[in-house]
Image (cartoon, rainbow over all chains, first blue to last red):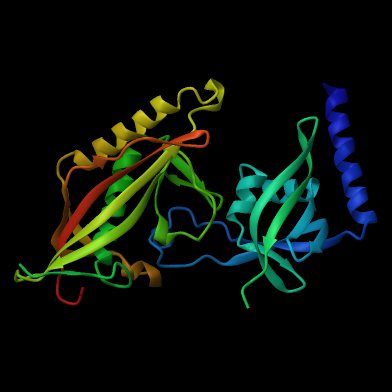
Amino acid sequence: MGDLLLCGDAVVRSADALLRANGGRAALLRMPAPAVAGNDAEQLGLTAPQFQDAELSPVLFRRAESATTLLVSASAVMAVVGSLKFNSAEVLFETAAGVVIDEVLYAIVSSVASVWDGEPYSYCLTLRAPDR
Amino acid sequence: MAVSRLEASGGEVQNAKDTFYELLRSRIAAGNLERTIVVRGQTRPGVLVEENELVTTATLPDCFRLRWTAAGVDTANALPLVALGCEILYETAGSAENGGMDRGRALAAMDAELTAAINASPQFAAKQNYAGLASGGGVVAMNTNVWWGNVVFGAAVGKGDRVARTATVTVMSYEEAGEL
């Protein structure tokens, strides 16, 4: 079991190294601020939450005619999942308002995890650029 | 009888909508303390109003999602009588420890909770104005009631690994001066 955990951890580190070596950069995941406990005004739509940006690094950003994608390190994603108390990376991405890259807010269309030994080592996000 | 359509947005009928949501949420929570959801890091009773939440692609399972639909007003009375359509959507994948094989039972449990919450007497509540909460104020009791009929269940439908259902209920209230 220990070997398996070490193996999964090694793959995550390898993925991080590859992302950095191939021009890895940082992106900002724009999240609505945590809800206020027992706040009826928020639940009734009377007040809006603030937004906060969480850094994802390293990431690889690719913008093409057919699709805009962001390859994100799983270790960076898990750090945000833990700090914001989400159940999973999928819920995190579904809840996010988008990803800020070069001061442009992209909507997250879908997320796919790449998994080794049951442990994700990277996430591929399909993004949608804002309407102009 | 003069009946017209209302735009179900803005300030119109908002007090009736808010009052019904607050009451349904408290009844669901009283019926099953474990019926909770986590929204933006906070645990709360498993009832939400879709139009009051941030737009998201996520559909939370094991909770009741209220969606306000049609609204009609009968102006033949001394006070306009408003009827609001409310869809209550919910879905479940069952429990992981049972491999989802109990999703039918989980849906039936949600059916029972909803029936108990909506069909239980009294099927009315004093209408409240919650607008003051936005500025740190309090809730103001109004002079009229909100009341509703029995819940009507739609067919259960498969939705990936989940089974889902939409129930409907009609919520009515008299609109007081300044509400329309």
